[in-house]
Length: 441
Ligand code: HEC
Ligand code: HEC
Ligand code: HEC
Ligand code: HEC
Ligand code: HEC
Ligand code: HEC
Ligand code: HEC
Ligand code: HEC
Image (cartoon, rainbow, N blue to C red):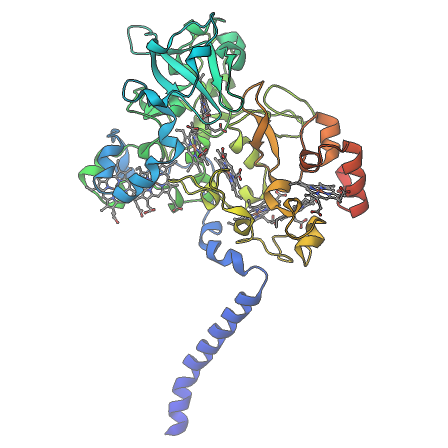
C-alpha cells in the first residue's frame, strides 16, 4: 500500500526536483540574463517578404492619436513627451517652438519669421517649412538657412546638396517637402500622402487604426513585438535608416527627375519594408558622403544602416530592447547607463565580455569613464550637419580600432577621450594590451 503511494508520487517528485535543479543551473549559468529574452530571440524568422500586417487591418484609415488617447491614456501621455511628437511643430499654435534667434537671421535668407508654418526638429538643428503648393496641392519648401542648436548659429541649408543631385533643380524653392521629408516626419504621410498629424505618433508604428477603434480587439492592430524580432525593427528602420528610392533598381536617377522620393513610399507597419526601401549601400573601403569605408555613418539617422551590421541585430536583439518605443528613453538626456548593457552581458558570459573582471576587459579603473561600455562601443562618430561637432553615437557596437581611423578618418573611442594623444599612441597601447584582431594588426 505504502509502496504503491510512493510509487505514485515518485514521478511528480522527480519532475519537481529536475525543475528545481534546472532553475539553479540557469540561475548560476553565465547566460541566465538572456533567459528573459528567450521567447523573443527564438521566435521563428519569417524572412523579409512575408506581410505581417493583420488581415483585419488591411484597408483601415488613419484616425490620429487623439482618438487612441481615448482608451490608451497612459501610453498617450508617455509618448507625448517624447521627441517623436515634437518633430514637426505648428508655429501658429505656439510660437515658442522656434529655437532659432531671428534677430541674427542673415540678410540673404529667403524667408522671414512670419512665413513659417512648421518647424522641423529642435534638438540638434531646426529647419523651417514654408508653404509652396505644387500641382494645386498643399505642399511646402524648406528655408535656405537652418539653426544649428549645437553651436547656436545660423548656417546655410541646401536641400540639393544633401539630396539626389541629379533629380532636383538647385533652388530650395523648387524642391517640395512632399518628396524629400514628409514621409518620415508626419503621421500617415508615408502611406497615404496626407499629413494626418504633424510629428510621429501612434499610427506610424501601429498602422492605420480606424478598424481597431471601431472594434477594439488586438487582432485589428499591428504590434511589432508579436512577430519575428528582425522584422519587428522595420517599424523603426522605415525612418531611422538612410535609403535610396526603390525604383532605382530598374530606373536611373534621370528617369526620376522631380519625382524621386527619399522615404519608403507606400509602406505601412507590418508590410515588407524591403519591398519599399533599399538601404543606402556602402562600398567597403570607400569613403563617401554618407559612409566611411568601414561601414560607419558619417551623418545622423543612420542607426539602422549601422545596427544591421551588429551581431546583436542578427541574434534578434531589437531597438525596443534598448529604447522604450513610447518614451524613447536611453538617450543622452535620459540614459539607462552601463548597468543596462549588463542586463544581458556579464563578465565571462558566452555573450561577452570574455574576461572575468571588468577592468581586465577595459584596462581602465573600475569607476573610470574609460570603463564605460557606451564610451568604447558607441563612440561619437557622426555629425548632424557639415559644420556640427561630432555628437552622433554609432550603432555598430563592435569596437572601432585606431587603425580604422588611420585608414578612413573615422573617430575612435580611445582618441575621442585621449585628445592629446596620436592615433599611433592608441594603436600601440592596444597592441601592448593584446586588444587587436588579425584584420587590424
Ligand atoms: C475604444 C477604445 C480603444 C481605442 C479608441 C483604441 N484602442 Fe487600442 N486597444 C483597446 C483595447 C481594449 C485593447 C486590448 C484588446 C485585446 O486584448 O484584444 C487594445 C489593444 C491595442 C494594441 C495591442 C496591444 C497588445 O498587447 O497586443 C495596440 C498596439 C493598440 N491597441 C493601439 C491602438 C492605437 C494605435 C489606437 C489609435 C489608432 C488605439 N489603439 C485606439 C482599446 C482601444
Ligand atoms: C515609434 C513607434 C511607436 C509609436 C509612435 C507608438 N508605439 Fe505603441 N508600441 C510600439 C512597439 C514597438 C510596441 C511593442 C513594445 C514591446 O512589446 O516591447 C508598442 C506597444 C504598444 C501597446 C501594447 C504594449 C503596452 O505597452 O501596453 C499599446 C497598447 C500601444 N503600443 C499603443 C500605442 C499608442 C496608443 C500610441 C500613441 C499614443 C503608440 N502606441 C505609439 C511602437 C510605437
Ligand atoms: C515616422 C518616422 C519615425 C519612426 C517610425 C521612428 N522614428 Fe524615432 N525619430 C524620428 C525622428 C524624425 C526623430 C527626431 C525627433 C526630434 O528630434 O524632434 C526621432 C528620434 C528618435 C530618438 C531620439 C529621441 C530623443 O529624445 O532625442 C530615438 C531614441 C528614436 N527615435 C527611436 C526610435 C525607435 C526605437 C523607433 C521604432 C520603435 C522609432 N524611433 C521609430 C523618426 C521616426
Ligand atoms: C527616411 C526618413 C527621413 C527623411 C526622408 C528625412 N528625415 Fe529628417 N530625420 C529622420 C530621423 C529618423 C531623424 C532623427 C534621427 C537622427 O537624427 O539620428 C531625423 C532628424 C532630422 C532633424 C533633426 C531633429 C532635431 O531635433 O534636431 C531635422 C532638422 C531633419 N531631420 C530635417 C529633415 C528635412 C528638412 C528633410 C527633407 C529635406 C528630412 N529631414 C528628411 C528621418 C528622415
Ligand atoms: C544595445 C542597445 C541599443 C540598441 C539595440 C539600439 N540602441 Fe539606440 N541608443 C542606445 C544608446 C545607449 C544610445 C545613446 C545614449 C547616450 O547618448 O547616452 C542610443 C542612442 C540612439 C539615438 C540618439 C538619441 C539621442 O540622444 O539623440 C537614436 C535616434 C537611436 N539610438 C535609435 C535607435 C534605433 C532606431 C535602433 C534600432 C535600429 C537602436 N537605436 C538600437 C542603445 C541602443
Ligand atoms: C537584450 C540583451 C542585450 C542588451 C541589452 C545588450 N546586448 Fe550586446 N549583445 C547581445 C547579444 C545576444 C549579442 C550577440 C553575442 C554573440 O554574437 O555572441 C551581443 C553582442 C554584443 C557585442 C559584440 C558585437 C559585435 O557585433 O561584434 C558588443 C560589443 C555588445 N553586445 C555591446 C553591448 C552594449 C555596449 C550594450 C549596452 C548599450 C549591449 N550590448 C546591450 C545582447 C544584448
Ligand atoms: C576601453 C574600451 C572598452 C570598454 C570600456 C569596453 N569594451 Fe568591450 N571591447 C573592447 C575591445 C577593444 C574589444 C575587442 C574587439 C574585437 O576583438 O573585435 C571588446 C569586445 C567586446 C565584446 C565582444 C566579445 C569579446 O569579449 O571579445 C563584447 C560583448 C563587449 N566588448 C562588451 C562590453 C561591455 C558590455 C562593456 C561595458 C561593461 C564593454 N565591452 C566595455 C573595448 C572596450
Ligand atoms: C570615455 C573616455 C575614455 C576612453 C573611451 C578611453 N579612455 Fe583611456 N583613460 C581615460 C581616463 C579618465 C583615464 C585616467 C585613469 C583611469 O581611469 O584608468 C585613462 C587612462 C588611460 C591610460 C593610462 C594613463 C595614460 O594616459 O597614460 C591609457 C594608456 C589609456 N587610458 C589608453 C586608452 C586606450 C588605448 C583607449 C581605447 C581602447 C582608451 N584609453 C579609451 C578615459 C578614456
